[in-house]
Image (cartoon, rainbow, N blue to C red):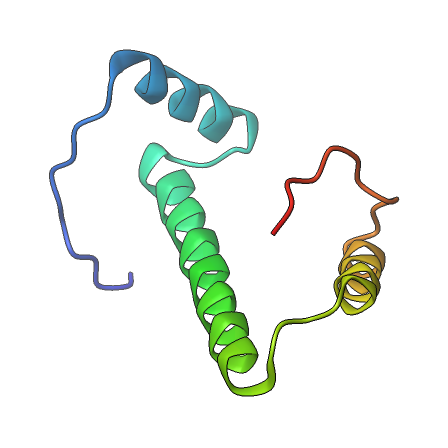
Length: 88
């Protein structure tokens, strides 16, 4: 069994219930669901930092470049074009 670092965390009751529900729906433990959520967030944060670094060195992406990137991401994840995106 992998080594784990134990932590004590607190959540508002409604958030804890939603995590329990989602974990059960996904066939995961509460801790397993949180681990996956944290890993996903860490990857997103790293990607945002990398993009910000790139833009600092090369200038901001154009609207066309952003649209092309969104299309590639949607295709990679098998999604149709998303609606209601927040502007970056």
